[in-house]
Image (cartoon, rainbow, N blue to C red; front, side, top):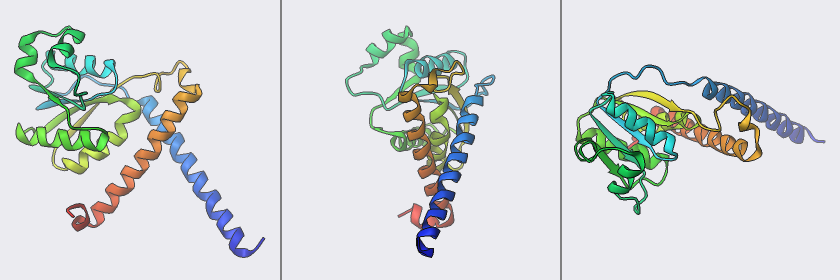
Length: 202
C-alpha cells in the first residue's frame, strides 16, 4: 500500500469515527429531549408528520401557550373541516387562531413558511412542535430564516425516541441515521453562511 493510499484510509477511518461519535451524541441528546412546562410565546408552529405533533400543538394553543398556531406542510387534500373533526377541535378555535400552511414540502420549506407567518404576525417568539429526532435540524433551519426570533423547542416523543427499545428495529434506525445526516448538512450549511453572509443572501 502506498503512502497516499495509507493516508486516504487513515483520513477515511477518522471521518467514520467522527461520524459515529457524533451520531451517538445526537441519539443520546434526542433521547433526553423532553417538553418542559410550556413557555408562553407569540405563536406556535407545528411541523406536520404525525398525529402526536398535531395533538400536542393544539393542546398548547388551547392552554394559551401562544396566541395563534401554524400547521406547516399540510397536504392540499386536507381541508380545515377535515382537520378540525379529526382533532376534535371547535370551529371557533379553528377560525380565530389557526392557519394552515400548504406550501412546504420539507423541513427547509417548513422554516420558510414559518418565517413568513411569524413576520406577518410580528411574532418575536415561537414554540416549535415536532418529533424529538427531527427537532435539532428543524431548529437549525428555522434559525437560518428567523435569526432574531426566540425559538422554544417542544419535542414530541415518537417510536424513534421512546426508551422501550422499539427504535432498534431496522426501519426506525434507518430513519434516525438519515435524519442525522440531514442535520449535519444543515449544520454545516448554516455555519458556512454565518462565515459568509453574502452567500446566504445570494
